Structures are given as structure tokens and as C-alpha cells.
View 1 (cartoon, rainbow, N blue to C red):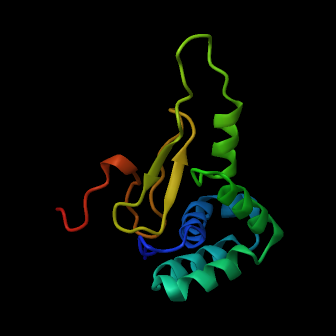
View 2 (cartoon, rainbow, N blue to C red):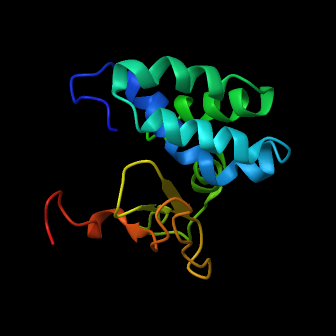
Length: 146
């Protein structure tokens, strides 16, 4: 469930961190990835008031998760640390060019999963919860649309 638009920025950042970190769990905490992923999925399905403390508990349960989350929250655009670093490290040729941002993908069947495509050759994964291919955020159908 998405926090209300009127929610504090810290709460919105916490929800974004919980959605974004799910694809990184096997790298960050291989022995607990499935357990943490299940907990995050269950918490994200709750209402914002109930979810926030549970998300904070899960994201703070391992130092690797806490460090990753802190880096995401420190980024003004709330991008995963590797995505934010790749954009910062980009240096274009002289001229009026700018870096190409990593494209954000979401599950079209829910709001509990996000993924960033860091290169054009990177295949778009399927949502491990709903079994559908993730879609570029700008292409996500509006709620209630068929």
C-alpha cells in the first residue's frame, strides 16, 4: 500500500526503500533474503500507519540493509545506491549532453516492487510476487484501467 500523499517525506522514503531493496536482498543478505523479502511484502500490504514501523524494523535488522537504506534516503531522487553512483560518475563528452537516468520499472499489478534498469542490455525481470513482467513507470496503466 502506498503512503498517503500527505505523509511525511521520511515515511515516503521508507516505503520507496522497502520497494527498491527487494531486488538487492540476495546480494545484501543472501542467508535471509527470502525471509526479509516476505516480511517486506507483508508490511507493504498493510496500511501506512501499520507498515512504517515494521518496514523500519526489517530495514534496520542487518547492517547491510541499514547502510543501503541510508544511502537511498540520502539521495534526493531516492534511487538505489548503485544507480545514484553510476549517474554521479557519468561524464559526458563536451557539449550540451546530460546523463541518461536509469529507468524505473514497477509491477503493473501492485505497488510493492520497483527495479531500476541500469543498462539497455539488462533484461527486465518478472515480479516475483505477481509473475508479470515489470513495466517502465511511465507506461504503468492508471488504477482501474483495463
